[in-house]
Amino acid sequence: MKTLQLLSLSALLTLSIGCKKDPETPSIEQKEQGTLPRVDYDTVGKDTVVNTNEPEKPVWMGNYSGSLPCGDCKGILTKLTLNSDMTYTLSSQYIGKENTPTTYKGTYNLDGKNIITLDAEGDHLKFLVMTDDSMLKKLDKFGNEEKGGPEARYFLHKVI
Image (cartoon, rainbow, N blue to C red; front, side, top):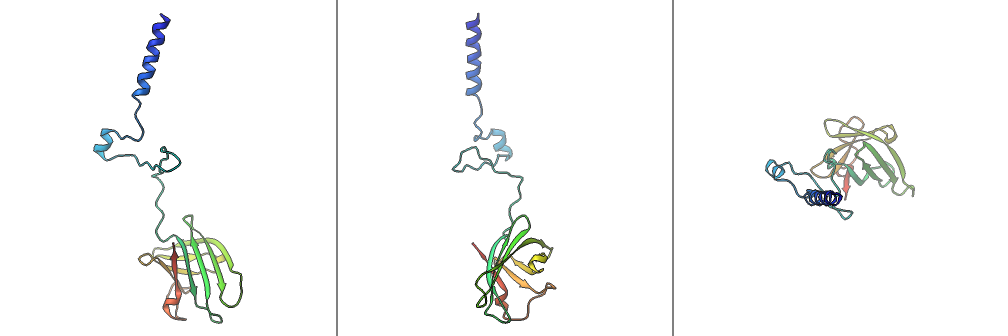
């Protein structure tokens, strides 16, 4: 009797393991309804799932670099990193004056007109996001275009 029970149990176990659905194979219902799970297979393993609740990072976030005008030097080598958690890192180095860059870290705000404003640590600098050209344009403290030099000198270009 015990042998029969053991055979039945092993057959049931084998059947349940054999009928287990493969997680990478979508069901017919999922295919028909268009509700396929998003799965990203990377080099780590084939069970890595992409978090679909996480919003995509805006295209304007990232690293920017350029030389901004300076009244008494050749320019200010400026590097700005905008992070998704609304923090930034700003590095400024006066060309021809000092050898070490000054680095500032803090938070920024983005208003409805695509203007980024750095906090007090970044001297409340303002930049216009130009998403079509992957650039930032430095603005004056009121959010207007700078007028102290050629317009092309006020752009920071996205570094890829």
